[in-house]
Length: 616
Image (cartoon, rainbow, N blue to C red; front, side, top):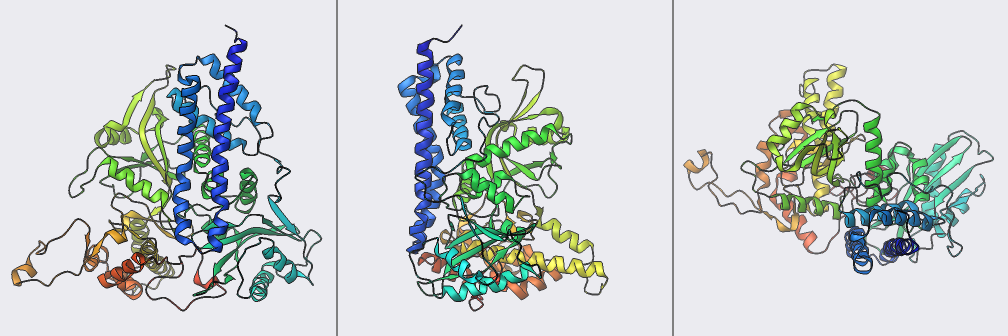
């Protein structure tokens, strides 16, 4: 049956309404991101955090608004499939010359699957692959800023050009001493260039919008000299105790940028007309970082999910290994599995939880949502959340299927729902996180290599001892950074933390987290009598959010070598007064500084803070 002119008109109107819905979404998203500049200039840190949380919800709100409009005006869910084929074709036509086509395609997918009630990997009417290229999209005529600006300094005017580069961002607040800071930047840059002369193509390219997060603003760019590119970022902060700005450090090289754009950090606020151009620029600085993680870092999490899933399907087609139960100690709440060749883990909430766990599926999901919306300060892994995910059955080990059938049967369906003879494993709800080395395994490897034996002085043992010390110190730093973010992890066992490729300890088990400000930090009461002291049971009352830091030691510090390192660097974590003091500061409105770089990189380091670390 051929479509009629009336059908075509309806299809076009639906496509136009969907595009209007996306344009409204991105206009609001961009406006909120642009307001980060004013919040930074006025040091409105509470407002910045609130905007971060609220912006995450924008996408789902706009999808719901658009879906409701289509149902109300066009009864979209009742339209025949030939109409929906035309809707997609009209929508593609509307993407010509659009500045966010990839985001608009994802928005189309979200609205369509919501209306047609189909999982997107089954739907014939969505964008499985991009229909419009994002290459070489130009800014609109009324856009005053290009995606990036290029500067061409010479050896004799480098400082003047760097000064102009910073001033071009037009921050409406005063620097403490910009000339001094630029001189420090230049001093740090020169060793990066080494003895190499400045080639004819020497230039500095910087993205034309500042990147805002927490209490900082970042200039992000790269130096090009001959065939060498050096990525860099300049953090701009407020001077300690003042209302003037300083350039705090020069971050350079791919590793520094990977930490800055880590999957364990809150999303940046960036004003972008052409987000794909920003992603392309950042990818040139961090070629090993997946595009989905860059979109996530820019606050475009739905696009990150879309790209992740496309990458995942591509990987499945080009690999043959099987999903398996993830190595390590099994959790009581989450069933975790992985694909050895793929650097992520898949987590499914179990149907039941043995004592002493007292929780529910809804509570666990609320904890993961809390983390998604919170400032993660580099210590909590971001998660991708999916529903109705299909996997090829032949890629699952029988042991893994048995594990899911035993612990999460409500989340499992095995069927040939497409009718093509291919059996699928369908999981109703799953979280996906970057794979890390569990901290308990990392420390056990150090023990096995002799790291806990002070009498072993072999090179392997000495390296293992360094590994042990690094892991324990980083664990304590992670806990202190979580305190700074107003997060108490709940279950503090080593197995709930992981080591990233850059040696950072990150927390990833969220079912027991609480806000520090909701916890009651108590000292263990003195025993009333000798029987109390000898008893294996507690002799004092314990409320649901009572925390006794003195009791952490027996669970965490059974190994002598571990205890020695921990007590040297983090003994205050066993003191309830330490926790209470920082809780009181948070309640009083204090926001801690937690930097995505080491104290040693700072041009203006503060006096060493013995209460909380100044850097990660």
